[in-house]
Each structure stands twice: as C-alpha cells, then as structure tokens.
Length: 230
Image (cartoon, rainbow, N blue to C red; front, side):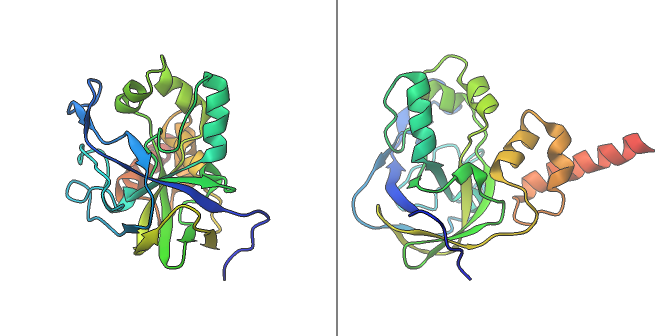
C-alpha cells in the first residue's frame, strides 16, 4: 500500500553527466558534472559493481571501481538541502551539481529508510540502499576548502538506490513511497555509522537492503563488539 504524504513529492530535475577532466579524480576524469536533461530518460539496473555503471541511460561513470553498479544505480539529492548548502556557501548550486541523477522536492532524502521503496512516475520502482560518502573527486569538483569534512559533519549525504522495476523518469514525475521497513535505520544514521559514529554500526545489523560491502563492515563491527565483551 502506498503511503500518503502531506506534501507533493516529485522529481524536479533528471541529471546526467558526461566525461570531463578533473585533476583531483583518481583516474583524472569524472562524470560528476551532471546537467538537467529534457524528456524521459530510461532507468534500469546496470549490473554489478565493476561492470555496471549508472542505471540512468546516457549518464557517464568513469571510476567503476568505486561508483556505479546495481547498488548505486541512481543517486538522489533534495533540492531543499541544496538550497541550504547554497545559502551557507554563498553560491548558486544548480540541479546536478552534487552529481545527483534526481533532484527532488518535498521529500527528506537523507531521512529515508534503508530498504524504503519509491515509485517514480508510472512504472519505475527504486529501493534505498546506502548514503553517499564524500571523496576527493567531490571536493575537487566543488572547489570548497575542507569540503569532505564539512559535508561529513553536516550529515546530509543524499541516497543511492537500486532499480527494482525499470522505467522512464522525467522532471515533474511524482514520487510515491510504496513501503518502509520497520528497522528505523535511515540514510543519515547509516552515514554517521560509516563515518563519524562507528559505534552505530551494530544498529545496522539485519538491514537486508544494505549493499553486501556495507554488510561486511557491519558484521566486522559486531564481531569486534562481541570480542571486546568477552
């Protein structure tokens, strides 16, 4: 059953990137510079990490070792959070500037639950998987001194999604929350667990929608906790 939300939630912009040079990127090239596109864009599961790139047709991902794949098929960021950053940084932040594929309105993307499912438009179904962890490519692209630390401390990472049912997406499409798990683990909590508050990692145990790489981190944390208790 779909959840009724108090305000209109929608996709404000669909953004795709092309390859460009960036000195700070590990490979010297990046697809982080994403720009809004018109018309419907097909979205589908791209394949496993290291092979699959973006789930958004036409979107370039250069570093397949660290980005893309089924568990990071789509990245979404809230326009409201971009606006808050724009005020703080004193600069315009257009849709796509954080490397997001979907710029949303009316939904707290960082407050979504791991495993929460969205229907976007008529047929696309996405599932929340994990938070975005900032890297030197992101910092180099924005050109803000100390950006990784600043972004981490604010804990507004936005969310990655896997594609459960493929379909087109376009600006103006409604976002409907189809289901929410009952574990209470939000993107924000997961981000804090993986960055500034590792003591939270055991809270993520049993969260099935997490990517396998994140599950391994959680298992190691639980094992360490058990060992220290003996």
